[in-house]
Image (tube, rainbow, N blue to C red; front, side, top):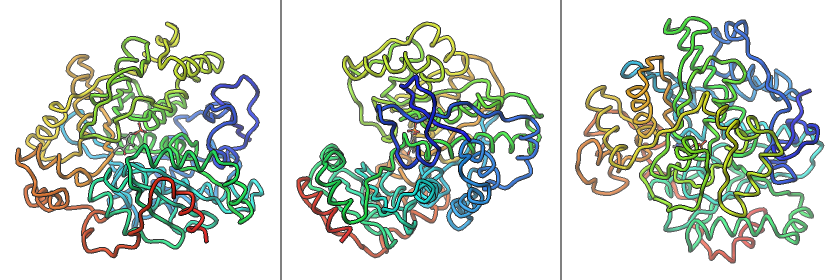
Length: 494
Ligand SMILES: *Cc1c(COP(=O)(O)O)cnc(C)c1O
């Protein structure tokens, strides 16, 4: 059985995958990691080539989640990635301008890549409750600045033995994001706006998690608190799948022969998505270079160049908001793989107390064998959207554009012409206002009207999760003060 341990602990691994998924974070504050990395052989890849996406996903997950049966995993993957949810296929690879291949990860129910993990993880959690003998219902609490809340609501909707409640800042999300959340369907979901900003929402949720009296009250009613956070292993493992799947698709398209290398470029925020690619590489997938793309918050570019991770810097709001991050939590897992647990614990301690750490030279040498960092300014991001549209008639969102910019810079500077898989993490319609500005140079009439204006200007269809939003029935008009959040939670479970 594959066991899991904390990135910060030198003790032997002792936790099952189900336990790690249920618990989320290790007891010492570290992140759960598998005790060893399973190998992916050419024979495995040969077998995966002929499979559907759900079958590929089940096979790869079974290497890590050994306490789940193959039947369970296949049933969950087939339900998660069913065609009604992923209308354009789970993770299609679209060639644009050689050598770029865009891996579209946004065909799920919220039109963003978080669906790739959040459609499957709730099913894994639901089974984890049974496997660990948990009799209570999991109550997921989320504070959101927009995208995660909606993806979590869709993922946990009607999942047995789980309820989910999302808090969002009334004036801190876009109109599209708000409409997506307050029209959410499902029997086990709740949504509440708060008078305040995202930090108020986040602090309110943290206060509830840290309140023993609240835990006692919930326990008496048969609930325990859980989070949908991106550091949960149940969110990370499903992300390994699409890198392997992309290579299978390159093989099937005759663009690679078995074993020939390729490159990958990932628009990065919390470092979860790109770490999954790194792990796929360590399993044996022939990724030669992994390009870490950042926006103006380029703390990771600086880290990869200098070895110093320093969060004492200005924070920028950009048109790729899901990458506006100064602490990339999943970087801890890369440090663990390259520096070991003792040094990882020391780096994280320094980050907490001084806001910075310097990785040792041998660690950076190992990391740089695969990873290289580039970033795009706001102007460069808009230019990449416009260029890709004008030259290749491909419409991309600002996060994807950051990655396209980084990939093209890398190719120009290195002369490396291997096939370059670029992750596309959101539908352009999710950020229609900025995409419309970049493509046409015009100001949209409003956030909501930008969708139709962009469609009229480009002829690219609006994906189903975002069409007809204005006509959907509003279910959750409630809002409260930050101090009333706990009360709203208790009212929600009834
Ligand atoms: C979450 C997100 C990212 C960043 O992914 P990480 O795994 O946090 O690095 C990039 N783009 C979009 C659209 C996202 O929603």
